[in-house]
Image 1 (spheres, rainbow, N blue to C red):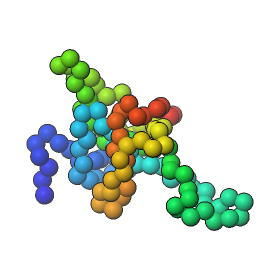
Image 2 (image 1 turned 180 degrees about the horizontal axis):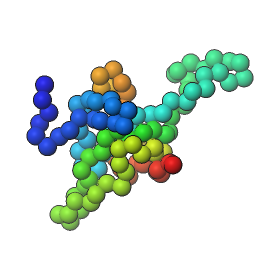
Image 3 (image 1 turned 180 degrees about the vertical axis):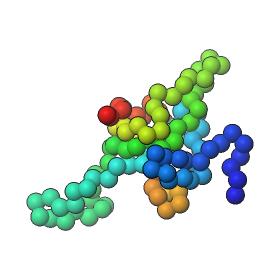
Length: 111
């Protein structure tokens, strides 16, 4: 299956590729999971864990239009970012979970 002209698949620095092309000022982020599963000797089930608020940008849109001018994106592929706890929309592409959010939902670039 080919992608439409002018779109690209997700290509991260780790080489994962999918068929998602964010539009306008949208950013596709892969959440960085917390590696700690035991706290005080108790197992915390996935449903009780807090959602991660840090992730790696795997794709960015071309930017939004403002007064007939395209405003370029400030984040780029490979950036580690912090975002709001309830920001964006979760999607699954090729069995992997991603978060699509607006660039304005990105709070900071880490690193």
